[in-house]
Image (cartoon, rainbow, N blue to C red; front, side, top):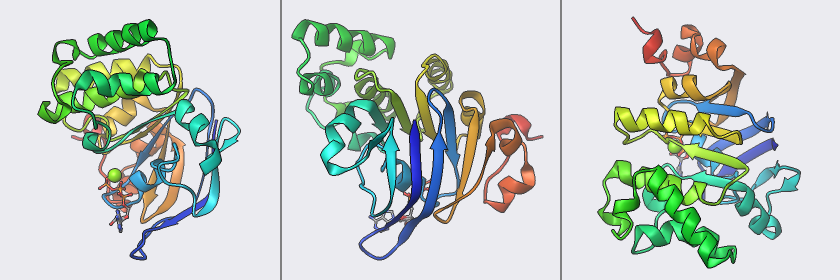
Length: 239
Ligand SMILES: Nc1ncnc2c1ncn2[C@@H]1O[C@H](COP(=O)(O)OP(=O)(O)OP(=O)(O)O)[C@@H](O)[C@H]1O
Ligand SMILES: [Mg+2]
């Protein structure tokens, strides 16, 4: 479903953020991407819906190359949840942020209203629908971003630090929600217990490179491998 080939990216100041990344993700699978701060995870996943375009190498989603001319198709297929919810929410009213995507697709008004209400209720945001996103708590913003992405029914869901700011109950709710979605999923997270609970495979990034890929339980129980990449065992394996 996702094919990344030899992808590299440099920032304008010359920082080489990712270096020759190659990765294939099967349709319907769930893959975690882990690594220390600055490893290049966000830079990598921000390429998946065309937010960044490939400088070197290429990406395709469901056979469609991620390029300027295919952006409309890519946006319909790939929902990207930014690490910072403030990058996601930009209208003056939560409801409008969630309705924005479907409206852009020219969907029927009645259908949009039903879809938006369903998503807002599912994420306990219905009562907050008239608030400006800027006046929501961090966790509420995180769920609001989820609503805005899920309302589009993406075929691929990319999440960058989805559990940041969530209380334990909402974190559990998110695990159940994510596991109930049969679509292709990519999750970037420092919450290795969340990755353990939601991902079949895991990739480790270190200084812009993809250094290891394998089954979640093999990778995340390998203390030496994790420590060599400035990571620690999931809490459930620490004692
Ligand atoms: N606007 C920018 N200009 C220059 N360098 C940048 C810019 N944004 C990020 N970087 C650099 O790119 C590299 C990768 O950053 P990135 O945000 O992808 O890391 P990350 O793995 O997502 O880290 P974190 O776990 O902290 O979110 C870092 O070295 C960072 O300093
Ligand atoms: Mg990041």
